[in-house]
View 1 (spheres, rainbow, N blue to C red):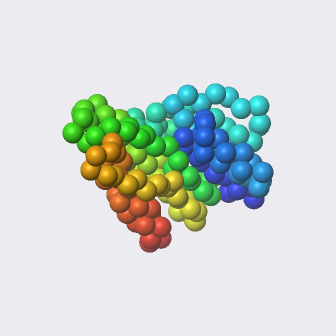
View 2: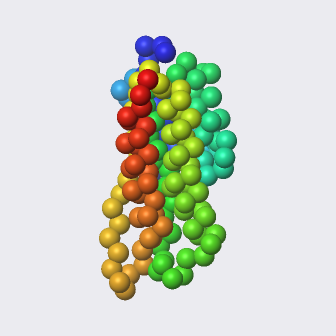
Length: 162
């Protein structure tokens, strides 16, 4: 891998993700930025890859683009996430599929592809939040259910045997 570190950031088009892109650029990283609605960047050291990480193959496409353009990956920030605020009993199958698609499948797809490209070393992180649910307040039980799974995947990826 070239001397310049490379980071892949999902959910990079707005909010925390956009802030992460700017922050990593400030400290000298090349950035591969992803979201469903990602637009091209004027910065030649920011490669944008539009795509829905809940869809099989998109994670691999992001990683392949990073390796092709920058020669490798040092860090992955799984920042993309969906939160739908409504009572658990009002969740539809479509809500569940959307949340677990991005928060779990997307995390898995990107992390699996990246770890395969980082066997000589690197870091995979997930932006995780804590959601407190009160009995009479809307919450996102499917978001909370996905968090231990993504934390386990990070731990497992960090303990690879070469």
